[in-house]
Image (cartoon, rainbow, N blue to C red; front, side):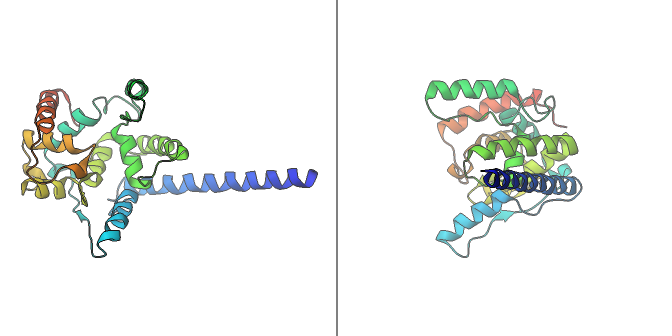
Length: 231
């Protein structure tokens, strides 16, 4: 019995050490990416792996552009659509999380996540699209690290450069060229709002998509954009 307890404690200690080292690995990467641009993310690699199951030659469309070369309209649209309290919270919108929980209970399934831009960035940078109980806990820990190390401007810059905007299309520059044939710096308010609407389901819409839902939601985001100040 004593031997079993001793081995149990040793295993728990090893697990704790491994978990601590993993968090340190995340922390080092976040610190590095505060001043260096990530060229790929865990979610990009995950999507590429899936794409190559059907087409071994598949490649992602992605081109990094600095914050100043991304349309101010797109910055406002992303905040208006995904995280209206972006400048005020520290990574978590507790009102949004509660509202999402209540909506999921009413619907009887997960239809809303209530994730902030920082939480979405944490997931994109380090986690795959797989769902697991530990994933939300790890996402929360990474979110806290990002908010501690990075400023809001840097968080939004990385987010807009790595988020998915089409099947294999990542980042504002690739999205603007894919959907509208222009660079991200030239996106109009309406084009930006339309891109923001696509964020929750980016692979549903191709170039020229113009569904009734897309039209209605674009109008809603356009109306919210003036009050969504970017950092």
